[in-house]
Length: 117
Image (cartoon, rainbow, N blue to C red):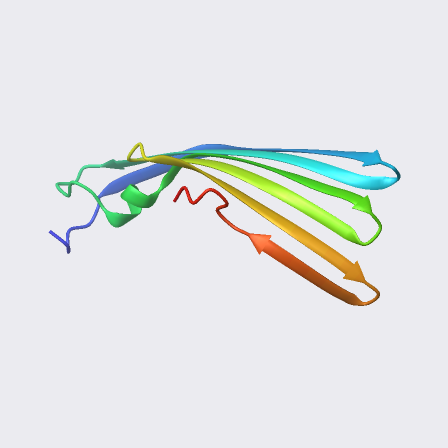
């Protein structure tokens, strides 16, 4: 079965992105919101599944808040909801802190803060 090929397949979907910029104490702040929907259809085959179809995303919603309250310090928090075509879903939250001192940038990143995947 590993050598069988699909005779027909189609992918349709859409993406949306919103970005809101505002100021607090003369520092730019930014909130982004993104959504992606993908509908994969595989037709006319005897193969029950493929690795691609099991790992394909169906819905993805992400948002990020970028903030700056001091001239040398920036931070961001990102949240992502993912649902795969097999129905599995999960949430991921990341955080980043960046300090800029003269010509040196130092940052710390924490990915998957709540160990959900």
